[in-house]
Image (cartoon, rainbow, N blue to C red; front, side):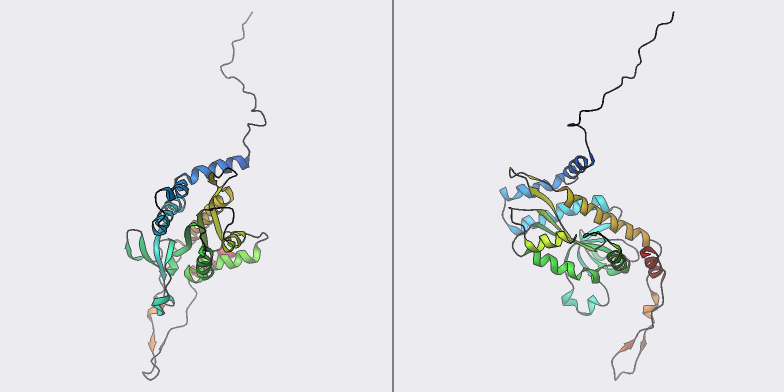
Length: 279
């Protein structure tokens, strides 16, 4: 007569319904951990109310988070440049955070976190605010509205294609994002609220019913999706976008006009890639 040995693997009963984790719970917990370092944005006012200091910390903490998501792309503060923007140097806008790649051209005057990024290498821009202080939305919207002229053609084309195809009210293909670290009080800036409804801005932390600041899962993950799209665009153009040497072939016109004539641009591999990516 054989004796049945007890199994070394014990079966576990499923957790009761109230303790089972679902997708919503998981995303909430994940959002809390993803922006754990940003929690100090809610506490920094205990030490200083200097808006310049608070704003500098907000930008630095958000940029650190962004760097984790967009690697191997890079970020900097500074400006985007090209021949059109530099025709009026005084109007080149300062940008809190630029997401860029060294292809087809690296940033110039790059030192520390600062750089001037050629437009063809810029895949996204972000305007960062510590909180929605009065007037913050107006400043943010002004840059976001201008952003299509500050990014590479592939980012412009992908956005226009997504507008035609989208069926919902938000879309992560817009090339710029406004980021508010903390929503102070119960009355958010109306302009920022409208930008958030359009999918062009996010609030990362909001107060709960007890006044404790907690991560807003929708805002955190919408920002992550936006950053993932920047990586997609840069990867699509890697090895396909080159400096257009035809731009060096300019023919001076008679001195009386004081103008130069540029050759008619020819299709480039970058444009072809952009078209293929939008179909």
